[in-house]
Image 1 (cartoon, rainbow, N blue to C red):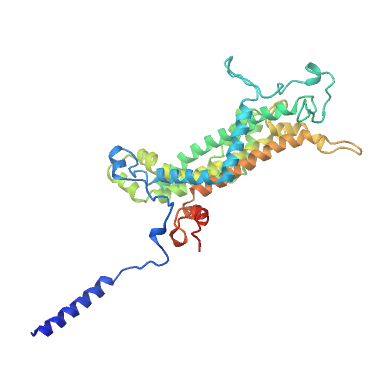
Image 2 (tube, rainbow, N blue to C red):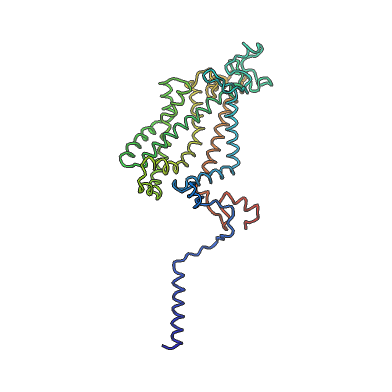
Length: 387
């Protein structure tokens, strides 16, 4: 073979090699990696973290997702404002009157000027009359029994707010365990457990709560039981759906291969990764429980009629909503307790929306031009990066 022939063969082989090297390559357009700013890392794992016993990825990145969600929640101004409102209402209710436990005063402060059961015209001021309008001395007026509405609204938050959080804590915890077991084991176990959930869903929740209260009677713990005995079903079904997909992922299968027990797999790998939708539902459900408790109180099936619970206060002033010809409606008797329910439930719904946005996986990503996700677009506009 001549030298010119060898050169031609080499050139042909080089061209063939170049064409072969270009096969299978994907060329990405419209993305500039150098312009990516303020992007959340997909994982906080590093060799140093693994060596030091930190984030080792054994829970499928759940810790990273919670940290990213917390950062996004802090950037949500409306959710943070709603959280401040709920915290303020809970704190004011706690400090409304002194709290005694086993005869020992554990909370000595009293923001409410009067005891919620004190009848003012009998022990404070004989000139006070039922349904006196708001005044500097009584900012929210007086109810039909001659009691200070301001003091009763402050103390009433102890019952309504605490019942909401206690019920959600109990139902979400039980629903998490129930749904995780059902979805993880599957088969006959899942079939039987889900049929129980279907039976619970066959009846409206408020009707079941009415039946429990009618059986056990009214009272604080009776209301907690009325909304807890059947309120876990929604959480169980939600968690079960999440666990069905999580149980087939690589990190769960790897844990089973190395011999981890079922309860360990559920506790360390399955349940933590199924918490995100459960937290969203729980944050929204607090307001629903408060409305349900107020509804039972308005129907006269909640707390004792003299108790300063917001729904029970509305029931005590029901007759003031309609007056005869020429009658004056004491609006303050219903507006302030109803307004407290409205503000709290609205704030909890805003918090629930904020939690949903913060934990939504679709919020994580890179926007157009490689400038980061939706949460970072505002910063890009401030820097003049948008085109």
